[in-house]
Length: 219
Image (cartoon, rainbow, N blue to C red; front, side, top):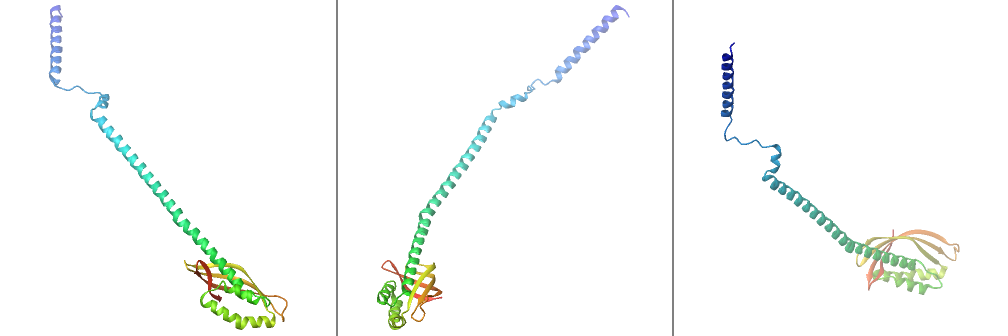
């Protein structure tokens, strides 16, 4: 191959390379937007707004939950204070009233079932101070007509002791108390004490702020 032929071939090759370059340039869009890097998404104008809205929503939810929790705690505290102020005071009052009713029933029962031939009038008078209503009238008649003559004739002496007592019903002006009683009896015919156990249901009525026995029934 001659030098002239070589020059011609080189020139042809250079021309082909120029054509290929022009073709590539022609295929590339003139208005193509540059490709954005992945990092550019972090700078989107809408992202901070969405993030702020999300944070605000989460914060508002937490504040609402905390407010509700505080409201529940405050309500429970108020309920507890109300319970303590009213219910506990009522319970304490009921306990005190029940105790006073038991004391009155116990003292009255001992007085009714205890007497001695040497002190009958005093014993009966003491017992009647614990009674009221129809039972007071009945006791007065019974002791004068039955108990007093027998006690004097046979020298009967009785002493009662309340072992246990409990309130079975309690109302503002009345109460029922169940009592378990031991009673010892002595007489001229039986000088050695005889012991008997019994239970009594006592109904109390409040008169002038004092508990008095209005009925007395063995059970």
